Amino acid sequence: MSRRALTQYLELLKQSGIQQLYREPVKVLTPLDKKALLESLAQKYSDCDKCPLAAGRLNLVYGEGNENSHAMLIGEAPGDSENKIGKPFVGAGGQLLDKMLEAIKIKREDIYITNIVKCRPPENRNPNTEERLACLPYLVEQIQIIQPKILLIMGLVAAQSLLGNTNTLSWHRQSCHEFMGIPAFVTYHPAALLRNSNWKRPAWEDLQAFQKEYEKLL
Ligand code: URA
Ligand code: SF4
Image (cartoon, rainbow, N blue to C red; front, side, top):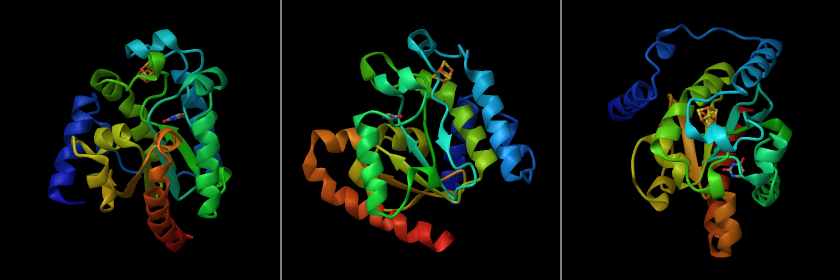
């Protein structure tokens, strides 16, 4: 991890109230340990009220998928369908995401999918800084448990939040970044692709770059 990326990462953790987590040694967890731990944490946080998004929550959308996957996909926030069902990317954006993954020969069940905030923002507005920082420790914890080797960050809001900058999506798409020392690719959010089909081609290029690195891990 570059010095700059490390400084950004530590600052992000500090702002979100995590002082201790990253100093703990990484534990070796079996697949069953990981599954049980994630289930118990999802349950534990289901009544979280650390930020105002709790008010609109029907279901906390913790994340789902293969807790042993080398790859983790990180979106922005639950929408209406996700809030109702309690799972990530189940609405129209989710259907497009499934197709995008299929195109790079990845099944949804193969990977782990989550978001930077676990509760739905009202009217699907972007989660604000307070909400992002309040929820970040949950994502950090998920990453520590799952220990993915590659990340795919979907959309500008998630990219700016995790990579600690205010650069454009084009800037983020140009190269592979790092979050918590893990290589992190950035692409368009599926909802953005539903709004503008001109972005499908560049998104396809991003996915192919991601696929190439992911397949090296298998
Ligand atoms: N958009 C996201 O970013 N995440 C979801 O889970 C659903 C829609
Ligand atoms: Fe808690 Fe995250 Fe939901 Fe905010 S968005 S209430 S921090 S789980």
